[in-house]
Image (cartoon, rainbow, N blue to C red; front, side, top):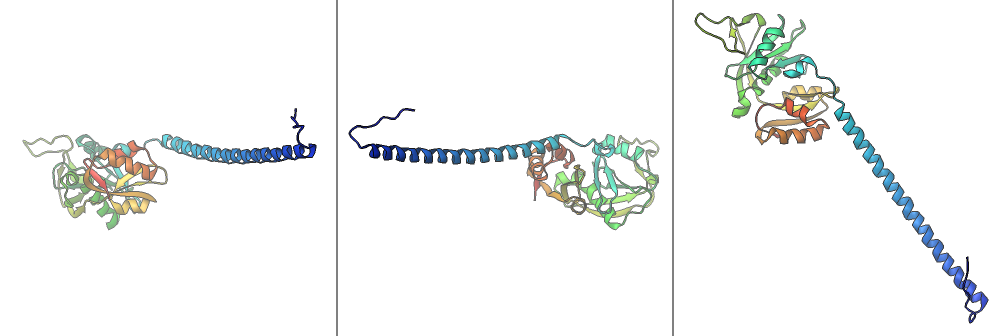
Length: 257
């Protein structure tokens, strides 16, 4: 390192000048170190946040395998009973014919275009709360939603009362059944929520059942928003996959309340 000395100045004066310059340079270096340290800290924080987001995305992509009942409408009552319902005439037929056991309870509305819902009792007796929730779900996923109705008349029967035997000269279309014997009636209400179970599955059903089974949920109602738009908002709130939410929403427009 070479230093230029002004011969017109005293040696001491020149030395002091270089000393002051050295002090200023040292301060600049220290300042630069502080800035670099701060920048590195911010960079580490950004990398940490990015890693967290990537882990969340990975977690969402690692979906749990679909259960057999997820091809249908389904929810779990606040009492813990699994309820399954038809999405169309084909699944209505499948549910009643293949998945309604003798001790189960079958629900249907009086209006056309209604799903059949079945409470899977496993030999136990559901209480009034579960029965009402099943009636509400039958209403929720019926045409009552699209028509903007608040209630619908729903009845329940035993599986033995449901058959494909049409009266002489008549024909039962796919998904339609003859009901015989006494019916128990309920006033089904259109109230709905979408929630996330502890196992990560997304469930849609009556609000009481969703609130009981899910820590995180969104209340929904018939509205003017596209199902896809609602699904995106709900998925963001529940940290869930949009397709999983969209699959469980009632058919028709909706809104978050």
